[in-house]
Amino acid sequence: MSDARSYRFADANKPGLLLGLGARQAIPVVVGVLFLALVLQTPLPPAVGIAGPVLGCVVAFGRWRGAPLAETLAPGARLVVGRRLGRRRWVRPPLLGDNTNAALPKPLHGLELIEPVDVAFGVVRDRTAGRVTAVLRVRGQGFPLASAVEQDAMLAGWGAALSPFAREHSPVAQVVWQEWAHPVGSDEHRAFLDRIGVWSRAGAPAVADYAALVDEQAPVTIAHEVLVAVTVDQRKVRARRRAGSRLTAAVDTLAEELRLFSSRLDAAGLSVEGPLSALEVSAAVRVRSDPNRAAHVATLTRSLAAAARRGALEWGPMVVEPDWGHVHVDGAYHRSYRIASWPQLPVGSDWLSGLLVETHCVRTLTVVLEPVPMGRAARAADREVMAREADADMKTQKGFRVNARERKRLADVEARERELSEGHAEFSFVGIVTVTAADLDQLDDDCADVEQAAAQSLLDLRPLEARHGPGWVAALPLGRAVSRTTTAP
Image (cartoon, rainbow, N blue to C red; front, side):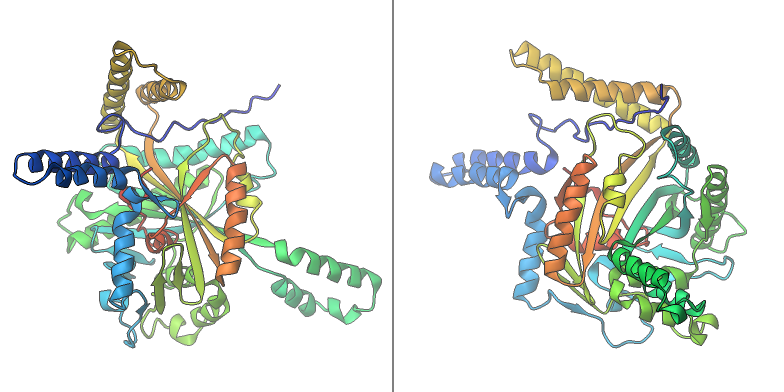
């Protein structure tokens, strides 16, 4: 009998503000009703006031191109206005070495890639949010080939490495892990075979058979790279007298958190490289923005100027053009999805294999983890238990039926409260899947494959319509994730 564990995800829906409605739906309805009440106090015809609730209901419950209006009204309006004003397409100004806001598209405003003198790694500074981020490259050892019990042990080690971030007064604001998959073809392997002289015996039957096998496997040869970004909030850093500034103190704190995190990952059996230098972060950003430039970027990173740290560090794109269903960055098209719901059934440790392994396109899976201090998590769970119990009691008193989904949500939050009381750490999280292709036809085909693979992993993907620009940025190792208001269900 197997001792493998099963894993479960709670329903992501939170108690509503009004009759089960969330803020995005409740606010338009309330505003519409208030407008009607105001009109009834004036000499205006009542028909004018009725337009308020009607418009509020349209905004709250209407859909446009399959996307809820409550989510897409504001970003869609910005796209339309930008198109009318001729500002939808952003082109980098010809200022060599300038990575200020003037030379970055709007989704990247406020970001700065620096390499402080006191540390030997690159730091992404977010002036808007007051945060600093560094990136680690992490590799696992044989997870797909391990038994279910061994996989459970690996996941437990990963959880143990993350748990200290949820301590009280932790300066770590978020941890982002990104799994980037991209086809690598057979060029490098063929060059290796050429260097060792295999092709000199091209007439041999064994060599011909091997060459045919290489050609057959080339389209499905996928490379996987995992980057983990750790972000420290400058406002949570205790200032030190020896630190010259709050930024210096934040970078010192970030370096210490990275050192401890790396040691915990090593103890969990994971291989850690980094933190990445500013040049390596720049290369990762540029290649993920446009995979067609991988060879060009690799040449630049091996240049003499890069080795001597001479010249400006270029990391931003050249052209960005957002649209309703995608964003065009340099020579690539990106389409992002939010994970609207996670598996509602108990799943095994390899439940994501369908999405991670079965897709043969360029795609990035991003999971943003925000640690929740134990005290705040316990209070939030207690409030949610009381809110759901009160909703159930009110429905029972009014003669309404409490359905199975509502009973499950109450059971989930009660289980969450119990786990917190046992000392388990809590993280709030959001998942983003970004698909990248060289043209729109290929993008549509790849997105269909990814949606199918996600369904196999019991994930519900919803496209970030009119918000694919922030979705593209979330897929980059910059520590700037899509806001919760953008990805709210």
